[in-house]
Image (cartoon, rainbow, N blue to C red):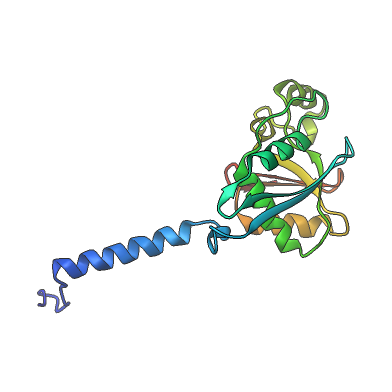
Length: 189
């Protein structure tokens, strides 16, 4: 069957099949990088808090599920070291860190400069150092941001790898020797 512009018109059942295939392909393209083999394997992180000296190397996701005990351990190591307050860290932030670590091709883990920040800590840091860029509504307070570095990897390499993620914000602080990453809107500074 052809329309007046000489294009072939598909019967309704064929259009439905093609629409379903198109929707499936589009939805597949939106899945995160971990989508391949998403129900098997493990996701791991190696974290060292530079303020407390604590070290954690843990599989936090195994065979399609986040592990509650591992998440609790991550929450603890990423706590506000000034107050001891613990906040759940967003699993998508952990996933982004795991992907980022894979891009860096290193066996060294992340050094944590700042994970969760309580509202009181964030307000104090903001008041003390407006020029340093401590945001009033920092995503650190929601467990959605972290300041990191990796021993043996240039900070600029870490920043560039984070930018390729396009998973949120990336702040570059060479004077303070860290990169900020978060899972908020995509932006850079």
